[in-house]
Length: 465
Ligand code: 4AD
Ligand code: MG
Image 1 (spheres, helix red, strand yellow):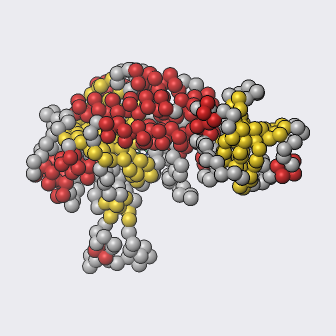
Image 2 (image 1 turned 180 degrees about the vertical axis):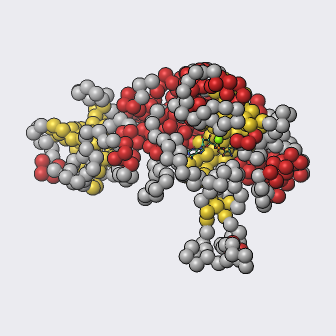
Image 3 (image 1 turned 60 degrees about the horizontal axis):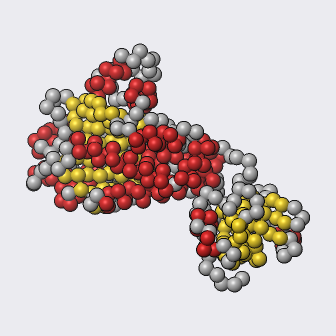
């Protein structure tokens, strides 16, 4: 074939004018093939957009036998003229002059058929899952959101700060960490009193995968002012729910001199910015998902962007739940860690808009949160969303050295000196929060299960690929 610069299908379909009546070079996977004995039509997709390009094969130019392997799933290289399309359903099409087959896909064994597949079935076909319309859409939206996040913080003067994935501390103190070790598990070295001798381990101490970059992020913020992290986090909680992953990505901004109100303002502005960005830049993909999975998707996204979030202390939230007259599966009382059904009642039924719940009892929150004057509650803030429940968790941090040391002692945490030093030397009021990236993608795509918004999900009893 002649050497012509390849054009993506997205370019040809979104801005065809410069290419009309010229010879174009396209490459992609065949989605469908149909036609008659005079002419054949391929729907070609190259992943750049959810839309397919129609390729017309005039059988006076091609040998039918040569075209036999061009079936659903095969990959091809086509050169031909881009012309305004006669048929309906597309504005332009390529009238092929030449076709090269890269790879065939035996129709008897190719797992993706024209009829729809269940999302569960597709989870087991990891190599083909991204080639479906649904996951293509989800993954393009995921990319756009990641870009929007970096853009939002960069434009605000925040610095991207990388925190370690292997760590010796447990930020959330929930004991849900995956251990990292090179010790021989069937022949563990022991100390004199029979405990595992971690001094013989790779790092000379016990180490784990991080559950959050926050503590290290605070060191960044108390030097650079405003930072954010964006990286994978790992949690060994045995939560087999549609909203939990064992490996998920988290965005954690941390800001010196921010108090809880500033923190809430930032969280609300941030999440609205991301949703707006997707609405503007992922129109085709969002419309596809809305049509196939969730008719109210676009309306819900706009609603969140257009309305103020409710801000409500936990204690008030508990009162509303108690007075709701609703039969919850889990009981409601002051001090309880809210379950997803409680969060969703407040958001979906009572207020009918996102809620930022603040000032939780200190017993159910992490040690680093700033204690309120009542001595009972901490300056926490959880952002609760329709369909999702908690999407953001954050707080103002305890900047008082004595109070922080008390909380650390209460919880029996060790090895935190490096962290407490930020309060020992030039301490400042500061705040931050964590957004679960997949929960955001879940919300924006309208998918039902968090396992369907990450290319390779990790969850209990599943570590394929
Ligand atoms: O509320 P979390 O545990 O907060 C923290 O980790 C803080 N250190 C954040 C901070 O203040 N810098 O987690 C934050 C968010 C949750 O609101 C949720 O969206 C998401 O992370 N998340 C999960 N997402 C998927 N799977 C899981 N197992 C998750 N656990 C938390
Ligand atoms: Mg939380």
